[in-house]
Image (cartoon, rainbow, N blue to C red):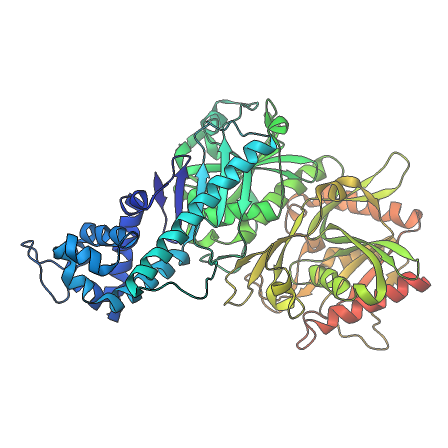
Length: 594
């Protein structure tokens, strides 16, 4: 069985195609073939000449000339392609003379097959097994069977392509290229009974949970949007009470966001984005879902009419003990940042209620070759230079560092231990970073693990795993707490690192949240965001104000250094060398204590 979206194809298992005949008789092949021929017609492509013998008039007679795509005998064309997986053109001509006009154009037919193959490969391709037969198997053998299923489908497509090419050209190729042509990602999903808090949530019960993901990178996806805009705002009622979700259209990625269990439901229209969550958040195990109620839930892709004017909202269901995020199903939110930031907003709202201080920033444990070490937090909104500074640390690692451990790349929280120590806890195992701000060559060095998004556009991004879950949630004591200032140039009066000696001065800089926009949202120029964190902090500003003062006072009392690091990332020409200079200054500060 198969499903179809504008830019991706879903192959549903476990009874996937096992033979060439299965492929050419499948509904998905005929839909792709029809779409491909329509595309050729729109562009008046020369490859149409190869299949002119399959053009028929409305009366059903063979003809020539332009015509609508439904006038092509696609069944006969598929039959010929199937025969070409076994026989050469001369053998087919003897057995099936009706194909002689097409086989007389075998060079053009070869070009047609090449272009059809590349057309198929342009789609984001997914294999989903969600029939419940596998019971979300947790043994190595079960995992291997699923991986093997994915590999068999890939090998079948590749074998068909090569056989047709070899038979048409009547010779074997001398160079074989193992191009990705099967499913770029395989998903094993299953239904798991969880603690449903109320009737409005019962419709989610039939939606399967993703339990295993197989990725064959590099994956390149092309979302319709390349930046995020607006904020996630609260609503006073639960929109789920008026929704009707069709389980077959949805999947759930059960994420461990820090130490919070979050169910991320998404419509299959956003499957490329939903699958990319595997590079960002730790996937929960069945035992962590069974009989448990999540602290947060995101429903990504509800009917737009359900939400009204605001298409990105959240509802604090205090009775159920769940913070629920909802995003409408429109092209405007077809961007991974909406997934990531809504999930982190839900996390931050819960953190504030628990008495933790959410931090929009990056944290790393740095151990230098000199023996000095520090746990550093860089606070900043999108484009301030926090992730880019971490990348600069990595680039300079050989010369300066013995070890770099990333605790969080974009969002975390501060907590005070019973002993009074302030520690940082992360949320993500990966990063969603701008290609433009990475060192040259880095994307290619990490291509085997990355998911690329719109690499041809401004604000091109990749999603890449960077650390393990145990490090994220371990809880590292904070030594340096710095605001990432990306807008001020460094000079004699404005050093790379400037420390604050009192709480009020520190709170003024951090709460002002100034930065030069880098085009990662719909903002431009020098902008201000409360505490550089539009994801929960301004929505609960009174509570956040009190927590910020408490945590800043506690850090200064415990000897934690608070200040700002001038990354210069927002200044033209300093996109890479700015964070590198800041990193060097930070290494020197850690070594010599400022």
